[in-house]
Length: 160
Length: 441
Image (cartoon, rainbow over all chains, first blue to last red):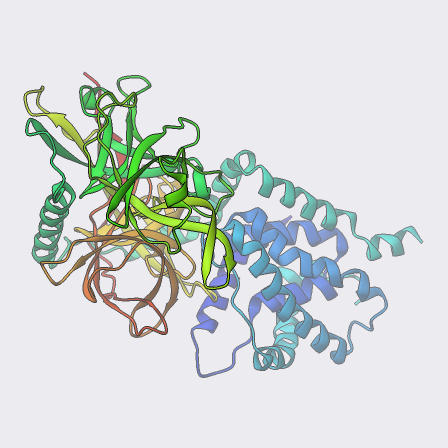
C-alpha cells in the first residue's frame, strides 16, 4: 500500500525530472519516460501494470497536453506490445533491453503522434535514428536505476 | 499454465487500455475524477508554489494599454467602414466580439458565431451583419432574452438562407442565388438559379467578386446592395485550355474560422446600447515554471490566491498581455501552457505597423518555438502588412479578444508564416481571466 501511495506522488517528479533532462540540448540524457516504459514492459509484475500505468498517465497530464486516458494509451500500447514477448526473452540480457528501448522510442513517438489528434497540442516529438541509438544506450541503465529504487523496486517481478 | 497465460496476456493491462479507449470516446464521465486525483497529485507543487510566490503588480503596462486602445480604435473604424456601400443614414454600427464558433456548415466550416451581446440588447437591429464592406451573415435573435446572440453565417445549413447576389462578367451583371453548399463540398457557398446560365457557363477563371443585390421586397430582410459576399469559384473539368463549369461556388472573403469581430447595425434612434454582456473576472495567481518533456518543454502550475476554481481555457494575463491559457482545470490550482506551445491553434488579429493597412483576422497554428520567438503557420485568413502587433481573437468564453500577444513579423516566403517575438514571462503580477456574465435586471 505504501508503495502505491509513493508511486502516486512520485510519478509526477519523475516526469518533471524527465523534462529537466530534456532541457540539456548538448548532452545526451536518458529519457525517463522510456525508462519507465521499459521497466513496465520487461520487469514489472503483470498485476501491477494497471496501477503503474494509471498513475503515470495521470502525472503525465501535468506536464503534457491531453487527458489521462490519452496518456494511458500513449504509454500503455507500446508496453502492451512488449509484455507478451518478455516470456520468450532473457529479460536480464542487455541486448534485449537495448532492442526493447529502441522499439519503445519509435513506438512511443508513433503512438503519441497518432493520439495527438485527440489533444489540443502535440504529445510526442519526432525521433531520428540518432535518438534511437542514444535511447538504446542510455535507457537500459536508467531503467535499471528506476527498478532498483523504491517505489518501483516494490513492483518488480519476484522471479528476478 | 494459467500463470504463464496471465504473464503472456495480463488481463488487467489490456482492460485498462480498453477502459482508457472508452474514456477517450466519452470524456465527460472520468474528467471530474481525473481532476480530483490530479489536484491531489499536485498538492506538493501547490505548497511549493505558495512558499515561492512573489507578490507584485504588472510592470510596463502603460505601453500595452496604449497598444490595446489603438487596436480597439483601428479595428472599430475598419470594421464600420463599408467603403462604397451606402448604409442607411439612420443606422449605427455596433462592434461585437466573437466569443466562439459553432456548428458545421457548407464546406465543413463553422456555421455560426456566438457574440458577446445578449439577445435582448440587439432587438431591433438589422438582420444583416457585416465587417467592413463584407457581408458576414444574419443575426439570430431566437432564444431567451438573456441568451447570447448569434450570427448565422452564410454557409449555415440549419437555417438555410438563400440570397440574391451578382457578379460582373464582360461588363454586364449576372444575377443568381447563393445558398449554403454541402458540408462535404470544397467551398462553403454554391450558386443556384442563374439569371443567364449560358453566360455563366462561359466563365473560365475563378476569382470574380460576388456582391449583394438589393431586392425591393427581399423575404430575408433588406440587404444593402454592393456588400461583398465572396469570390466566385469555378468547379469543372478541363477541356484543352479552358474549364467547363459543372458547378459554381463562392468562397467568403473572410474565413469563418478566423472571424473575431463583426458589426451589427441598429437604428440611431433606438434605446441606448447596453455594454457587452460577457465581462471577465480577474483573479490573481502565483506561477511555478515546471520543466516538461519534449515537445512541450515547459508547463506552468498556477494557483489562485483566492482558492477559486480556475476554468479550462481561461486566459493567463500579465496586465493587458496574454501569456498563456489554462489547459487543465482544478480547484484553486490549474495547469497552463504558454502561448507558444507547439501544435496549438489560435484565433488572432494582426494590427499592421502601417496605419493605412487594415487589421487582419487569422487562424494560426504554433509550428515551433526557438530563441528567435514563436513560429506561426497561417491556417486561415489573409495577411495584411509584413509586421505589426498581434492580438488575441475568438478563443473561447474565458479568453477575450483584444489582448496583446507581442510584436510580429512575416517569415520568408518559403516558410510563409509569422514570427512572434515573445518577452520573458514575469513571475509576479499574473492573473487569470474567467467569464463573468452580467446579471440580468
